[in-house]
Image (tube, rainbow, N blue to C red):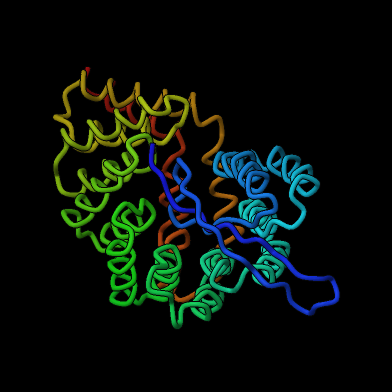
Length: 340
């Protein structure tokens, strides 16, 4: 269990005043809240209750439940800036930047622009390609010295524009400010993976797994970096940890099948094991790979390759299409049959 300091803002003043005057209170709370500016009082306990009820639902992508909780929270703590901030995060997770920006404007008016800077950057990045990156970078000038979350978002925008040097600088600054920033280490690892600097990627992803050892995506990414570095036993170990964390997710089964198929000894037992992993992938994917292809096809604009976001980088759709479990299983069966 980790702790972080939340900044609670009490919005005071009369309705006739053009802008409310914020009053700041700090509070240590448990949980993975690093980078979260917190919320307004009154009373302080009510605002804390709003955060504790709604934030975990957003993190778990239970957005309908989060909206319902937030609706009741408006009666519990109507003047909390955190209510608007949480509304923005729900909208962002739901892919609605228009609503998110409106809620962020209200939170900024109540508690100041720095409170919502990181959220403005993340919301801007909902727009794919160069447009979203340029919009995000508008908020990256004059970053406060202790703002790790904004630096991480600015790095993502820079990467989208192909500026790796600037992105790395921002990520290094974010890690210096908050050494346990899971997002910064993951983004750094993805940056190195994209340029096939697998040893550096392994260092970054290993740091992420130590910060949060229950994150499936961290071990999946570490497995890919280990595979790229030709450390096949370590890659398999990382994929198996991912499966232990969430046996119902499909990706690690596919990656294990690929590992056994492409990097195994080509003996029949090895190929049968690969085929079994693909079958498990098919069982858990339940057509998800098709939906993923459709989603990426819809979201990726025609942009120059060097400016494409990681989601839309060259070959991405072709890579996703190789996840077709039926094709992989048939391939395995043909290879095994040829050996008999």
